[in-house]
Amino acid sequence: MKKATALLKGRSAIVTGSTSGIGLGIARAVAREGADVMLNGFGEAARIRRLCEELAAEFKVKVGFSGADMSKPGEIAAMVEQATKELGKVDILVNNAGIQHTAPVEEFSVEKWDAVIAINLSSNFHAIRAALPQMKARNWGRIINISSVHGLVASGTKAAYVAAKHGVLGLTKVVALETARTGITCNAICPGWVLTPLVQNQIDDWAKRDNIPVERAKDLLLGEKQPSMEFATPEQIGALAVFLCSDAAAQIRGAAITVDGGWTAQ
Ligand code: NAD
Image (cartoon, rainbow, N blue to C red; front, side, top):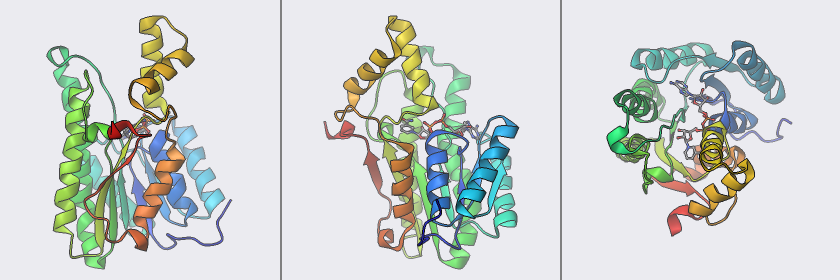
C-alpha cells in the first residue's frame, strides 16, 4: 500500500542485487517511501519484468532494471549511466549484490576468490566512483554498502567473503571522510543471518552434509552464532536503509551498523 507521507519522494535510487533477498527488501522499502528505483541482478527475464511492474504499480514510482554484472567495471558504470538517464539522477546508491563461497583457504579456488572480491568489494568501488560526481554536484547523496557481521568478525571457510566484507568497511570509512563536509553520507549495514536464498543454500548444504532435517540445520546455524535465535529480515534491513537516507541520519557517517541478533556482542 502507498504511504501517506513519502520520505524519499523526488529521490532516485540504485539497489544492486535487488532481484532477490535483502536487495529486494531494500528496493521495496525505498520505493514505499516514494523513491524511483533501478533494480539490478540476475534472474529470469519475465519474473524480473513482473517484479518491476508490481513495484511501480504498488508504490506509484518509476522502476527501471539493469542486468549489469557486478563483476564487470564497464557494466557497473553503464548501470549508473542508465539510471541517470531513465530516472533523471542517482541520489541513493545501495551496494548490495553479493555471493558466497566456502572452502578451507588452501583449497579455495582462485576463480572463486576473484569472483567474491570483484562482486562483494570491487563493485562497491566502481559504483561509488561512477555515482559520486553527480551527488557532489547536487550536494546530496546517500551511499549504503551492505557489508556483514563478517566485515567485523570472521568465520572459518569464508576467506574471500570475510576479506571482501572487511574491505567494504574500509572503503565506507574512506568515502565517508572524503564526503564529510558535504550532504553525502556513506555508511555500511552489517547483517547477521537473514533468511534469503544465499543463506538457504548454506542451510541446505548443512542438512545434506550431516544428513539432518532442514529445520534442524536452521536451528544449528542460528544457535552457532546468532543469540536471538531469530533471523533478521529483508524488511528490517530495508527500514534501516530508509532511516540512513533520512535527514535524521545526516550525521551518521562512516558507520558500520549491525542488525545481527547479538552475533557480534559475544
Ligand atoms: P541473495 O542471493 O538472495 O541475493 C543476491 C542478489 O545479488 C541477487 O539479486 C543476485 O541476482 C545478485 N547478484 C549476484 N551476483 C551478481 C552479479 N555478478 N551481478 C549483479 N547481481 C548479482 O543474497 P542476500 O542474502 O540477499 O545477500 C545480499 C547481500 O547481503 C550480499 O552482499 C550478502 O553478502 C549480504 N549479507 C547477507 C546476509 C544473509 O544472512 N543473507 C548476511 C550478511 C550480509
